[in-house]
Image (cartoon, rainbow, N blue to C red; front, side):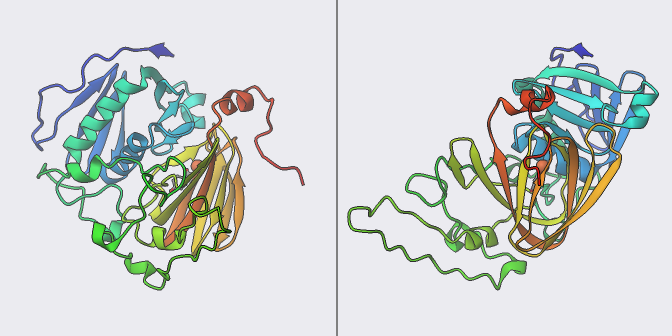
Length: 328
Ligand code: PHB
Ligand code: FE
């Protein structure tokens, strides 16, 4: 594994489809009407452009996330919180067995810059990589326009809790966030608060279902409450999680509504491990030694509970912590 420095973010070359080519280290990124091409020494990997842009959007918005973001079974990034590895075949048993994997390490801020430039140039007018497929235009074709407003969305993160004064705002009709077509039955009433005298202003509650019913994005957890390292990150899901997440710690899922099917594979080899069907009310802990991808046939509400303790990756990697949180 080598450590590369940033050579350039974009060559001035615009290809015949109208898209820029981008280089970082020994990697070159090209797009045509249907595909992203990832060139690396000696070979190239190809991905459908829509899947590539959906994964790229999340890798950027989540700051390379926790642990591994597999864009597919071959290409992805591993977050080392300051630096990031970008790889082909590293978490793929067949690539590894045939010594076909390729990895470079970058400063996170350098790779982020290149990824943002790719996303901005390659996303056409009308395509929103955060939207459900039924709620967006197509990613395909020659370059036509852009959608900077969509691709530059920041992750929504509360300082303490959504709805507190000066904190992450509740979503409203007036802010252009109507109730989603699949959540029209979600009550929009507000909780009643009856604090004891003297405790007014210290008690807070929101209708989280109402908040989620107005989400205009999919597979994009927002942080709605923060207590030390405990981050509650609910999200609305429809179609397929655009990345295959290999976590460096345990995370918990609580299915708030509808149903998601999870495919669980071994984190390093990708060998299928199990399927988990989560129905409304189900709770699951995703272990630290697997990768997972969710399928949500209808828009559903999911709570992702993350532990932001920065010592966890090392404590799992060293074997100090078991990959699962509970022994039954
Ligand atoms: C996950 O990888 O755990 C994850 C990511 C995004 C979501 C839900 C789950 O929307
Ligand atoms: Fe995950």
